[in-house]
Amino acid sequence: MYMKKIKYLLVSAIFAMFATASVAQVSVGISGTGFSADATGSETQDTAQNRDETLEAAYASAFIEYDFGNFAVGVDVIPYTIDSETATNDQSNAHVDSGINTVQVDIENVITVYGIVPLSDTGAYIKAGIIRGDLLTDENMGATSTSYPDADLEGETVMIGYAYDTGAGATVRVEAGLTDYNDVSVTGTGGDGTANTVTVSGLDGPTVRLSIVKAF
Image 1 (cartoon, helix red, strand yellow):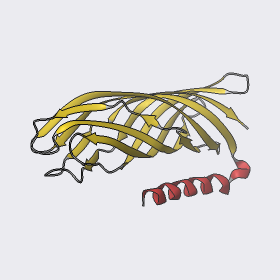
Image 2 (tube, rainbow, N blue to C red):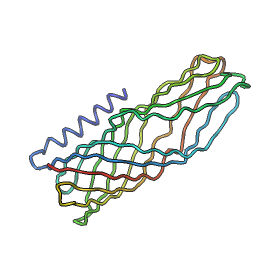
Image 3 (cartoon, rainbow, N blue to C red):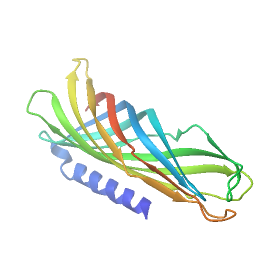
Image 4 (cartoon, rainbow, N blue to C red):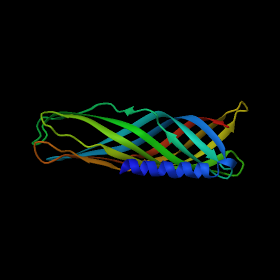
C-alpha cells in the first residue's frame, strides 16, 4: 500500500513535468541538509517509560527539477540508507520482555516531492514538499523473541530560500525552514507477555540546506 502511494506521487509529479516539458527548464542538483528535533520516545510495557532526546542528522541528496517560470516542481531522493546508532535499554528486571534490549534503525527510500514559488525577481523563493520513506527496525530483545515491524516515515517541509547565480554555469541555493515528521508508533510481537509499544513523537524542527544546481 505504501509503495503504491509513492508510485502514485512520482507518476503524478513526473506526468506534470513532462506534460509541458517543451516550455520547462530542466535542472539537476545535489544538496547537503541538516535537521534537528527535540523528540520524545515512550515505551509502554508493564510500566511506561519516557525519554527526551535531541536528534540531529546530516545527509546528502540529489534532485531533478522542472522550472516553468512562475513555479517549479521537483523530486529529491536520498540515494543511500541512513543508519542510526544502536540504542541499548537494560530491562533485566522487567516482568515482560526482560533482558538487555538493543535497537538500531535504518531509514531508506526517502523521497521528497516539492514545489517552488519565486518571490518576484529577488532570487528568494518559498519551497514546500511532502516526504515519504521506509523506517526499518533491527532489534535484539534480550531473552525474548519480540520483534518490531517496519514503519512508514512521513512528513512535510516548508522552507524559504535564496538562489545565487555564480556566473559559471551553476546556481547556489541556501534554504532554511521547518520539517515536521509524523509520530512513529510500532507494537512488538512474539514477546513473553503484554506486547511493547514504542512511540516517537516531536519529530519537528529547524532544517537548513545548501544546494548546487545545474540548469539545462
